[in-house]
Image 1 (spheres, rainbow, N blue to C red):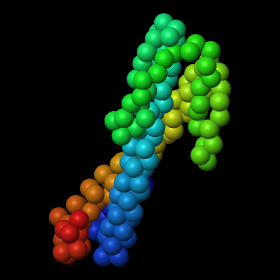
Image 2: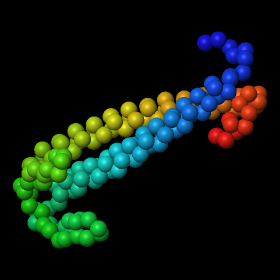
Image 3: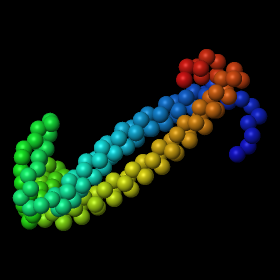
Image 4: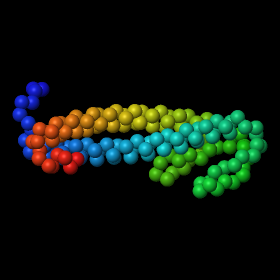
Length: 152
């Protein structure tokens, strides 16, 4: 890459502004995906921990089962009772508890991999945003872009 000897043209500044806006929009979309995955991870982790708690409890012990909306029903533990788990598209299947625990662990692993990938994408976009922001700040200081660059 050669050193810049001439300030960027107005067209280059406008293109950088559009690119910066696109990067910021992409980063916002990725942040939303990250939040959704983080919430899903928390749900899966709670489910796995709850199943482990059921395993440790005495047979016939009473517990509260959450129904949602801060509503619970009392129930008791039946050791060999199958567990219902969603498998996508609104379909729920019945499985043995160890199989469900294994499935939840697999899902958590995939979610963690997706989170790491998204974190990498966020870092890359943030780096690009920083580079473009510095370039536009430099253009604004040299007066090349006029008043348009200062609006960012």
